[in-house]
Length: 518
Image 1: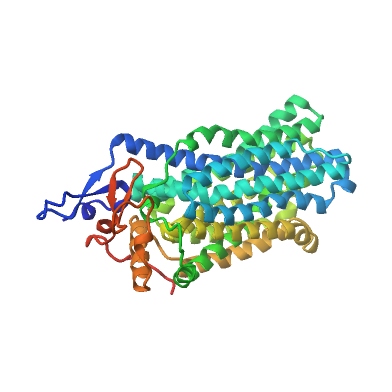
Image 2: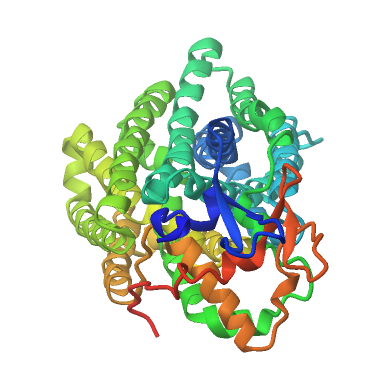
């Protein structure tokens, strides 16, 4: 049995080094295990790839409190529902641009350049938001809308850059635990950002009391801390081994790619749209919802209730991280959507009596609704979008899926107030979102492919075979070509790696993905 057969991690944690030409009786390549110090560097790549996603959770969560503060400062005539929605969805619009743009960048230019660029954009956008200024209150608010858009480009770019890099690095560490590792350094970090976004305003309110301007400015400005803390480490990171072996930097056959992956791309994009349509508005408007049922409680009490609410994200996400490797991505997603839909329907049905007579129970039910979203769809949206596509176009396809998701977040945010008004209160968004979640659970159960531990290596091998059958020159894959026949490249340590031996090894077979889709 070859080394690749005995090691399911395949090409991602091994270096195939060309044998000496004189050794005609040996295999055409030999495998070297990655040194322990190299494995340690891979763990750091996983951690620092995903950690800046804390900014996405923080910035998405803190705007709920900023909306509350600005409403109290400027009143409903200036800070009306229209301006409130603009401020909430401006980051989502910027995120769409960032996800699409940086999805292409990390495939065509490199993972590292994308990570570093988005880090600078997030720092700049957060600082600009905090420093918003205008000769009138309306002018100040419009500057904040624009600044949040710039921030959104960076935050949106973090999705493909951080998630793809973290997923590929996690596969190098242990493919059997890839799903859980991916969720812990991406979705869990985003959820932690939501919790921190609830804690920071409470601390600032305790310091500044009723002086709300420094509270909202510092709440936005402190968002620079997560990206600033990882900037140094990202400057020292290297592209993943799988990217070095399979990068497609020129002559990308997008038509061939679309013909092979259109159904998967439609599936991941559609499910992500539904998830963000449900989840983001319930996070963005959570403080407004709690304020409406708080019965005249102080601002600091309303914000404190949000800490409890957002804390439900974390156990839900941890359960999802365990579940994706234990029972699989498809079941985790389907069960989570179905359970969230059922709880949401109950919450919408008893919204009035529960919110008026037992606020703590309302918060618990609301929190359970959010937690179930983080158990099922939260972890699996990014994971599926990372795993269902080959390395060469993983960033592009991930970026498209995430961008469609952000469109869902934008639509959901814009539709939140109209749904509330049309259906007699905040129960309306809960009922509509829950019905959609139940329907989506059946779509996930019957149509979503299940990816196993060897799925990334298998999909890369199948993609190469598909390209060859369609007369595409696969010698163009990979970076830093040095061999006369372009079948070898230099890895990050300068060693010559034989691509052909990796791809054509008889031990790597056509994918055995259990697909329920055409």
